[in-house]
Amino acid sequence: GNPSPTVISFFVNRATPSLVGDGLLPADLDGPVPPPPGSPGYFVGSMDQGGPYGAAQDALTFWKFKADFATPANSSFVLTNTLPIAVYDTIFPCSGRQCIPQPGTPVKVDILSYRQRPLHRLAYRNYGTHEALVTNQAVEAAAAMSGIRWWEVRLANGVPSLFQEGTYAPGTSDNIHRWMGSIAMDAAGNMALGYSASD
Image 1 (spheres, rainbow, N blue to C red):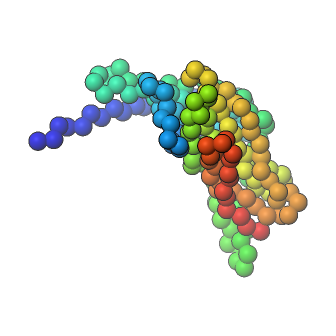
Image 2: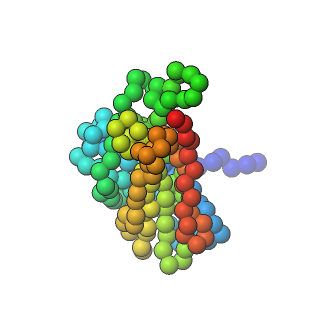
Image 3: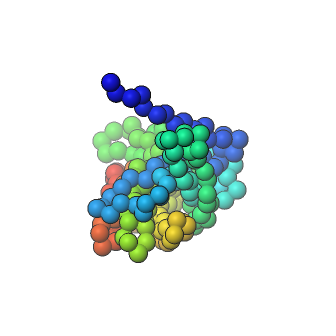
C-alpha cells in the first residue's frame, strides 16, 4: 500500500574543494514562524585562507537547496553567495587530534577547528521583518589558545548578508580554552553561545 518515496540526490562539485571544505551545515528551524512560502533550504560552509583547501579568502559560503518532489530533476543545490568575514585561523597547533589540554591527564582532546565547516547548529529564525541564521566555529583565537568565531547572517528578500560576527575568547586572559560551540537566538534576537571549556 504505501507509495515509494521520492529520492532527490546531488553531487556537489569537488573540483573547488575550498567551496565545500569538510562539509556544509543545514539550517535548523527555531521559533513558531516558518520560512516564507517557497523558501529553499539553506546550507552554510566556511572557508579559511590559511586552511588546507587553498581558499582565496576567509568567508562563509551560502547555498540554497530547492526540492521539486514532483519532478526531482528540476531540483537544485546551488552556491548563491560567498560572504567575506573578518580574518580568522582554524589551524590550531597540535599533534593529530590532541589539541586541548585537560586537567589531571596529559591526554588532550580534539579542537575540531581544522575541519573546514561551521559546527552544529545553523539556527534559523524568521522574525517577520527579516530572517536570521547564526552559527559558529572553533578557531585559534590567539597563539595556542582556542576560542569561538560566531556569525549572524540575515536574509532580506532571500539575499543573505553578514550582519554581525565576533570571536569569543576570554581564554586570552583566563587561560581557559573554549571550543565545540553551539549558538541560537531567542524571539527577541538575543543570542546564547554554549561551549566546552578546559584549562
